[in-house]
Image 1 (cartoon, rainbow, N blue to C red):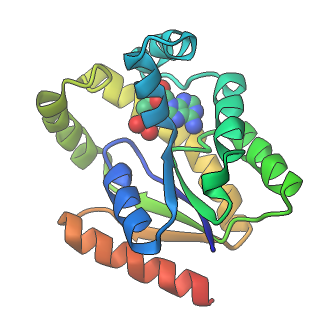
Image 2 (image 1 turned 120 degrees about the vertical axis):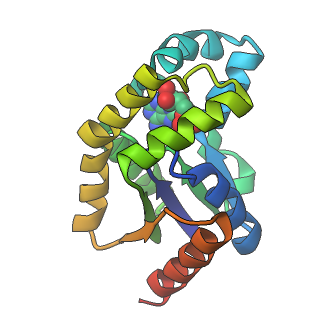
Length: 192
Ligand code: AMP
């Protein structure tokens, strides 16, 4: 049983690493960014609401995001664990997730933070923009997303560090190399 979070700045490769952790540990990876993007694509009411914020690089409001996560975590496939990618990003979301977990008498095992230098991230994201055409990958928006990460999500990381469940992994390097570090860090955290 693993219940874990992966947190990292935009461009740190958290989505890629989340998929690999999910395969190796057999837990479902849930990316709030992917759920939002699927809704934007499907032009659902949630997608139409979220798109305004996503295109500007802003956070979708907590009320919208929290409800979406509560609904997703109430599905049967997460009974044996999950890996949340991209949530929580604000301290209010941490409190909300605490509430969801407490309702189910559950707790988090590991919170993994992928670290990377801002300038490296900007370069990576500008490259990704050319490959994928993601509308939130232009330089001004990228810098805004990084500012939000430093301004808001680092406080989330600090909360989990205080609880003693945070493990940090250097996200710079080849994808396989980072995966090796990530898997090692999870193993150590779980046996601690
Ligand atoms: P990501 O793919 O994780 O970088 O997320 C893409 C975008 O989706 C973010 O820039 C936000 O606009 C939105 N988003 C994803 N997760 C959250 C969250 N936990 N809280 C608020 N907005 C989010």
